[in-house]
Length: 203
Image (cartoon, rainbow, N blue to C red; front, side, top):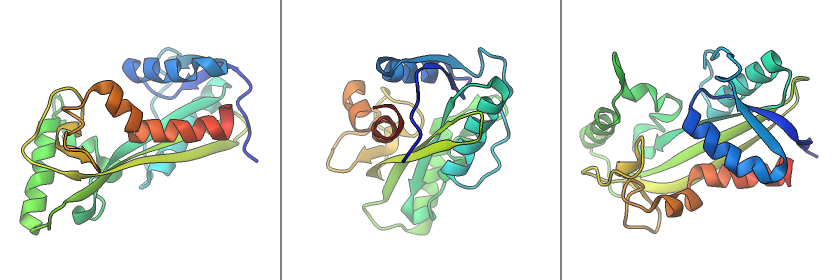
């Protein structure tokens, strides 16, 4: 039986204000009063694991230990089958430059590697999101969400972020970059993960 969140303050182990707002709105009906790790001045721990769950655990337990409050983290990324699951946990790293993240560059790299590999169509892929809710005593709940799809080229749409312009979810014709944001959020890997987390620890 999973431990349940009892309400009150919840640290979101992120320094991304947009992500914190989004998560706060999702969890408000369950008595969560969210505050970000950034607002509390918590350091960002090194993500040294090679799985989404491992890195999510690092972030959540670091925030819970430093704040003395339950803490929630997520680790997410794109896994392309013909690339052996890459970029996977290194999804954001593929976009890093000396002056910030360049996702068009990262998407070009994915397509170039697929072309070089002669990967067959459809070039299947999935977005994954792992959430970890951790308590200061070391207990945690971990869930994973995913959305299946394929990689397309050229990039299409400017409504999403990250790798959205090259990802077409299964059964759809639009990329996440073209799709109405509300429709995308309803079927996304993050929506799947949060539905599982609500059932496991909040509802």
